[in-house]
Amino acid sequence: MDPEADDRLDRAFQALADPVRRRIVARLSRGPATVNELAEPFDISKQAVSKHIQVLEQAGLVTRTRDAQRRPVHLDAGALESLTAWIDHYRLIHEQRFRTLDAVLDTMGDRGAARTEEETS
Image (cartoon, rainbow, N blue to C red; front, side, top):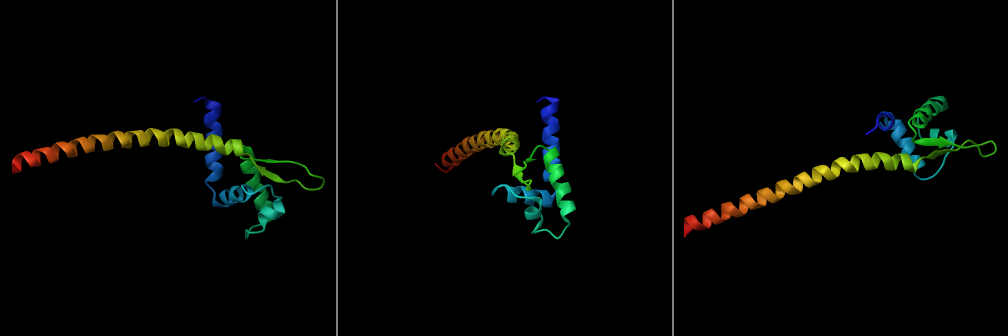
């Protein structure tokens, strides 16, 4: 992996380490929202929510647009797909290892069952 991609992953995972930011991402998965709308469920200031949005923006997870007086925040689905692809890569490697282990254990179980039948005959 190239260092720039590694840096993007680091920033994204660090941003998502905070529960408030994860809840903001979850809300944005339903569609764009303003800072005021995003701040509603939290018992923190709008300034604090804005700072969380900045962190998400610097991590490349969200973008902002201008719509007259509104500045809605949008989730960048492509950035989330990159994170998912990174996770899936390693998940698939481990799933293959577990399938291989299962096959070995099945073979050992078959051998053990055959020995038990020979001993009882």
